[in-house]
Length: 112
Image 1 (cartoon, rainbow, N blue to C red):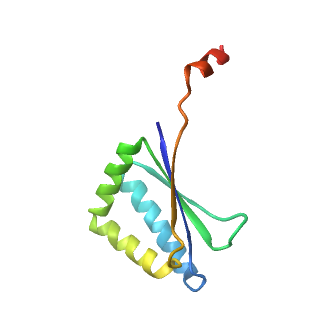
Image 2: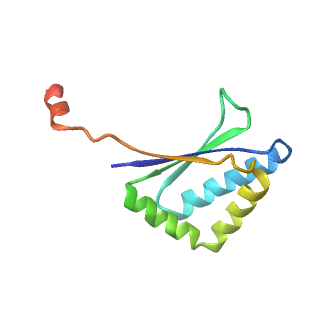
């Protein structure tokens, strides 16, 4: 069952260019070095400087394992440190975790 981690945050206006570049580096590094997929979501409506990371994992256990690996990786920590300390508004990070809904037997009967 897939697990989705949806993290929103506000990029400081005065650090916008640096923040976006750093965010792209984080996405690239995670996609190349860890077993999950990361996408950057940009605002179409709502707050103009609120961005999101959408990470997709194979399950909760995989999410825990990948997070452990990331936070033990000094190179990754060097990427995220400046991003969160210098480029995002303090207190603006919000994280939500979702999983896909498993199809039950009643759903399969309807498909036939």
